[in-house]
Image 1 (cartoon, rainbow, N blue to C red):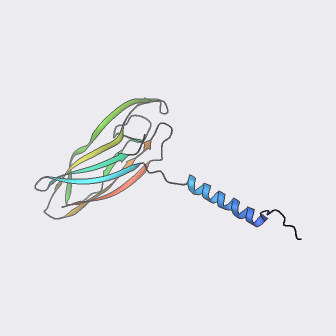
Image 2: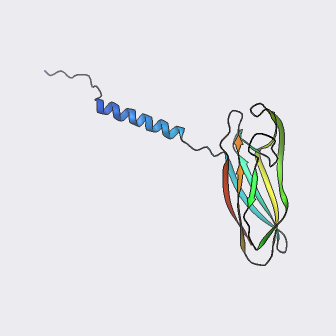
Image 3: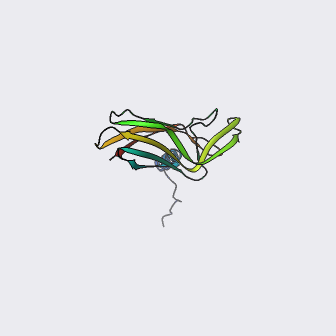
Length: 160
């Protein structure tokens, strides 16, 4: 009668299992966190006059800094590309529940939004032609324990 030895993994099998474990660990750590969702809306105010709204919704405990955030973090900045058919009217206005709080990490009082914020810009069209408003939002989000690196969110908004 032949005896069966306990099955022992070969060194090749051990290497394969170890490599798979390392690969899965790296994939898990490398997952990109994106706690923001951007939506865009255009409202016709009157002939050739529009209001563009850029809404940012935030997941969980994340917050985004105001355009005038205070010293330390990257303040949100809305940048519009030049379009010869469009002119900007006034400054970008922010709408949302603005919070002002002392932040221990930056050792200063900061202004930011949780859950959501809307950035509004009035624009005028020089001709009755469909065109696009292009640009980007430069921003940084943080929660109570960490901040993600500043990010640039590009956009293209159709203007009817």
